[in-house]
Length: 348
Image 1 (cartoon, rainbow, N blue to C red):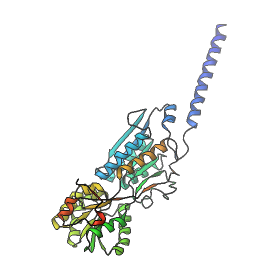
Image 2: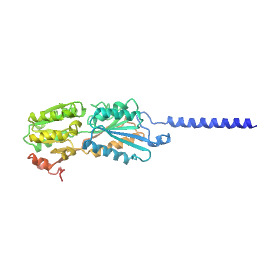
Image 3: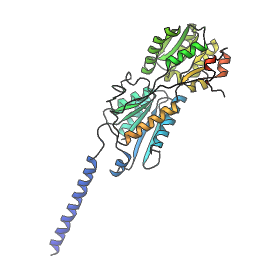
Image 4: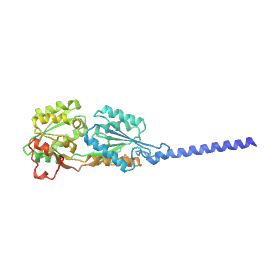
């Protein structure tokens, strides 16, 4: 009788264990479809209890800092706040070195991060290269030409495991501003990094627009930040009337080096966004990079909630507003024309 009872108990125990095993398998099989990251609730139900989000910022300059600030805000607005409900947000900075962002992205993939957000084109390329074969979604921010960078097949339908936000500079508006502030100018100098697809794309468009506004373009290409000083000197030697910046990470991250050369030569520099104006450029048609980051964070949250990264269209932000520095303009003898008197003076 005791043996029979023991046998029954053992049978019941095995059956219970099998039932639990099948239930666990059933939970695993309900994972997100291809292209979607597991949602926070799905991870908790599956026993993981956490969502790991990596943010890789390429370099520590103000416009990218604003992007990252907005990303964290956008994630939080959607319920993904660091340290709450099992959410972990790991923010790392590549210090303007792509070998750093390559390693950061590889580490995030190997450590099982649910999603990687990359700020600026070089960081996005690092994240995409590391994550595309690991089925880890990538959401990029401040990538001016994601198609040229090889991150998406098209803006409307990425189909690559990556999507995000694109900062489409208002280059026509920028050139119109330069013409208004410098009516006698003939030549615009451009310093850019030859390996940054966004800069190459911007330069091509800028050259196409130049004739419409009576300008010629003198460009100097560099390969890394150590060449910013010599590149700036080369532009000064070409006797350009002004310099225009794009969102080139090497140049913006070393803006003081460029401005040192141009200020000594009495050459004004136009920035591509407001933080460059706050740091010495005369004026800009600026985008709102905090807002760009918020949109990026919201897109990332949607993917974590189950949306398909492959079919989520890239959000292109192109609206710009004119800003200027009265002090910088005065230094170069620039008078703000009537058409721009309503622009924001960032000195105030």
